[in-house]
Image 1: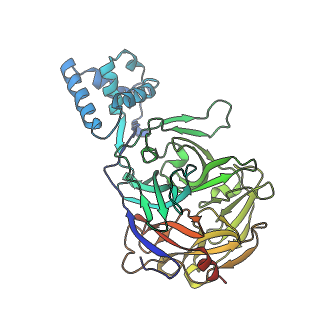
Image 2: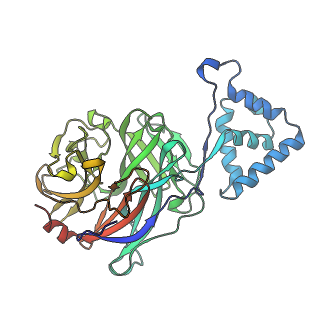
Image 3: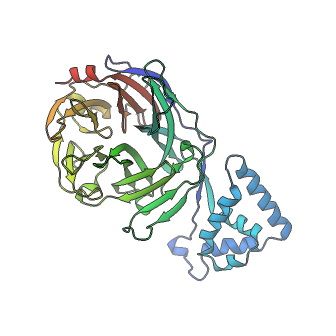
Length: 431
């Protein structure tokens, strides 16, 4: 990337790794024209497994365990869990031996390379435990959007550090990725809540969120993490993301506990039918606030008494300068600084170039726009602009530490990188 005066590029790149895979359900059914309720496709496949003689069955069992053991932990436990899901749909599976059950489960599972094509659009939040960090150093969690087969988006995580002396450093990800337990609508909860439990994760990078509900069928996109502080001082890791079913996009909310347990809830209200919503990191005068882009052109401000229901709103920032004439949006949750709410923005200009800018909102009344950048603070460069979607720089959330903006961002919907800069210099550049 080019190096604008306001930001210094780290030179650190995070690129997709097709070797990182997760085991997920592989559901099979005949097309509607060939549907046979008396003999569904799943039953037909189980019948074929039952037709194997003992030696052939043993060979199949050894082959699948040997294949998956190379990059997955507790393969037999994983297949046993999958079999329990299959058994509920295929009555004849009850009579299978333990060995045959694992083989059947393997036929209804698939190994999915969740970041084979791209790894981009990151967001970051500070870790709660900063024990042992050097002066000026901070540890953070990083979320990234991975794209795999079928252009399906998933969410993966990393950890890292930043210091003024050494810049950004990202911890090496685990070679493992954990297949989660998927639990819908826990008892006593409102319909629509989906729980993802990555209980086998030994490292943050082993947790993966892939589409599990109809609204997410084609992707979980652009998670905007926020470290939300309630009025009583309790801290929650929340994040808004876009759920895409292949036709319609809508906003949903993620609640993370230790990055091993996640609750995903569709948002309600007229504003939730749009994408790109970003939550403020605390309530203001007792109300939740959110940024949105309801008209696909301007940044909107919304408020609500209910974290999961969003209606109405009003335009807050609209296109003014050539690099944002087509549309504007946020690049993550607002960041609270002494001067107000710092909001990173994106603007779309000629030839669908995506650039990044910033604006400042009043701390007590975020409906008041105090200042905004006239020129982009980050733009695609001729040296590094090519990828899946060329001419794009984009972020889903940054941090401020010791008056330094720490900015992770995606390039060309392909890979992620980092930049940093002085908050004071950024504010002085606004008009």
